[in-house]
Length: 294
Ligand code: SF4
Image (cartoon, rainbow, N blue to C red; front, side, top):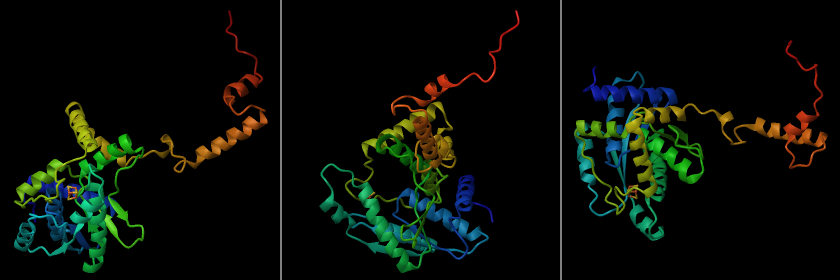
């Protein structure tokens, strides 16, 4: 069975690669897709459905829509599109919107609190619907933007994992679109005529200033270096702990500093004296200096 278009073929390859590399979907899985009705969640749902029909393994899919309770949210469009395609859909109505309004500081961006609350709901619903995996629609651009946001503004070298086991080990979150760009997800959703709806919250489409800046930076870099995104995503899979400064990753650094402290003590140095130049100056020559013949 062929794919519907060259774009679908490309996306199928990328998602299959992610599934294989990180064991995102396994035989017998019931994959729960967080389906907000945004372009990324539609692209994920459609692509998993396409792969399910062709995959050599058996797995089922259930879409879960977490309704945050904002006025005007067009849930019916999501329901109609799922019914037309024969997709199983579960609706979870919540008061996330009201909770955020109550607890958020004025001027703060609600998205990270919102994501955490929604994650909690998804974990609970996963148990109800018997899901073995929770699939989220984060794409390649989300991975590299998160990397740069943490690098520039949070003092941490981290992005997000393609597969994450929850702290209590009861849930597995997967991100099969890790190699799919935002532009590809948007184009695929449009090609498949899926109805993109907004979340209707006051912050909808309102990115934080830091995220906007990071997005602009990547666009600017991409103009000069078209492969910059693919280099960044490869970098996330090509970490060299010995070339970083985190001593938790590099215990030999501790050993070396212990050895350094020991040598300094033996050499009778004050702590602030640099070890190597002092020790070098005390070394006796092991052979006569080499003199060029005249
Ligand atoms: S835009 Fe609104 S609904 Fe979407 S993540 Fe942010 S707060 Fe939540």
